[in-house]
Amino acid sequence: MDLHADHKLVTLTKEICEGLITKAPLSRLDTVDSCEFLVPTSKNMSLNGVEMIKKALITGITGQDGSHLTEHLLGLGYEVHGIVRRVALEDPDNRFRRISHLLDKVHLHAASLESYPSIFSVISRHEVDECYHLAAQSFVAESFSDGFSTMNVNINGTHYLLAALKELRQHCRFYFAGSSEMFGKVRETPQRETTPFHPRSPYGISKVAGFELTRNYREAYGMFCASGLLFNHEGPRRGFEFVTRKITNTAARIKLGLASELRLGNLDAKRDWGHAADYVRAMHLMLQQPQPDDFIVATGESHTVREFCERAFGELELDYRDYVVVDDRFYRPAEVDQLVGDASKAREILNWRPTYSFEELVTEMVQSDLEANSRTLT
Ligand code: NAP
Ligand code: G4F
Image 1 (cartoon, rainbow, N blue to C red):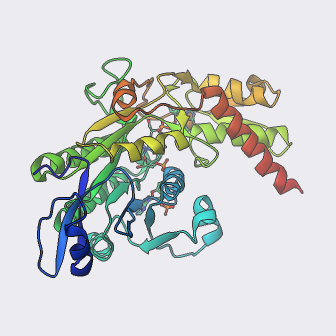
Image 2 (image 1 turned 120 degrees about the horizontal axis):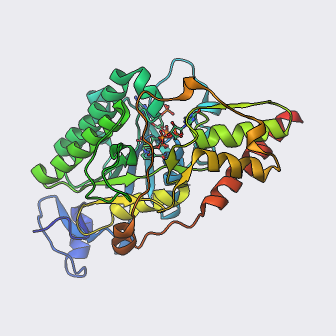
């Protein structure tokens, strides 16, 4: 029996089974004091008045993508669980700022990607149907400063999750947050699912390892494990250290008289920038397919950091050349010069398309930062 084929196994109590057996057009697999049914996974459904609410577990729920994905899944009727790590200084206003509007709707569990027992414990206590593994040390520059932590969290954390799911919930569908950084020194343009990897940073290497682990669990154990090869995606919730947010936030501060210059590294690097709200839809779609597979998610358009600056400062009627200072400190030991993705497979199979243009993305980020910085003045 092919358990991937758009169905999942659910366990029901004997009473509910008895009510369903004669009525539901489902495969009955077992009866003891509970029974298991194969039900379609495409949406939450009601069986004889029993609401089959899907449960999702998100690692990295406090991050940019985690917050957008949580909103998306809640909107689809999911019960959303998230893993958060303990920190010494509790600062909920700041720590949970991206999901502060969702805190009463989600279930948060303390666990660390660095601890297999903590992950095992969360998964053993909650019968999740889908697991979105987004948590990572995600800043490429930091991975050059501390490659060991990056590798430890990004590779072992992925392995711990997969191993715990294999032990406890083999039918849980798994999404791995792969990255265009895996293509690094690109072998062809645009990059496709078949383009060979040539990572250029400890971060990129860790993502190749996570991708291969995910594929191996799919092939070795028949688990539904899919990877998204996502190109850069941004938005007003982007971390301030990433170049887009650094540009929009500093440009807004310059406009308001709160800053006088913007120090950047390589202005000629090219990236395929989309909007995070668009990209989380693709993550969800990947886990609704009949078979697990890997997909590129990209806009197919590439711009230089310089073009991003020009557009962002232009939005505020400023000329970036008057404010941007090139600073060697922000160059990387090995750069990824240009990335642009071919998302035709996602378009055809997932029916996924980005809705934001490059111009709309920059405008939204600049206006959001202008508004936020203006508030600090009043
Ligand atoms: P992000 O904003 O940096 O969020 C990272 C998340 O990971 C945060 O929730 C963070 O929690 C959590 N985390 C980090 N280390 C952890 C640890 N040791 N234990 C538990 N949680 C930990 O990243 P993002 O932009 O949302 O990206 C999500 C995922 O997609 C990442 O895996 C990233 O590498 C990948 N990706 C991103 C892009 C992109 O352009 N955004 C593109 C391709 C792939 P704290 O709040 O506690 O720090
Ligand atoms: O914004 P960035 O730091 O993003 P990067 O390195 O492309 O990585 C992001 O996208 C990946 C997907 O391809 C994700 F997997 C990853 O997790 C992350 O979300 O840098 C973009 C470009 C680089 O070429 C960098 O050298 O901007 C260049 N840059 C120039 N000056 C700068 C700066 N980047 C940063 N962060 N800060 C600068 O001052």
